[in-house]
Image (cartoon, rainbow, N blue to C red; front, side, top):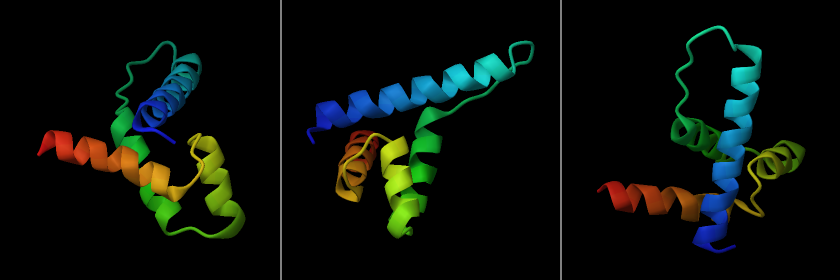
Length: 80
């Protein structure tokens, strides 16, 4: 998967989560940090195996943990 596709996929995941949060909490203020959610789920994925790992990859629209690593590396290198 290319970096461009990985960014597009993670943007979609973030928008899906945000949409769900705003539907459930429409009358309240919400603080939502998509990158933080992405990092936490990627870390959980790194330590997971079997069906749990596959469910996380499916949810994050990633084919492999390597795809998640590419996405994380891009943001780490662009911030440093």
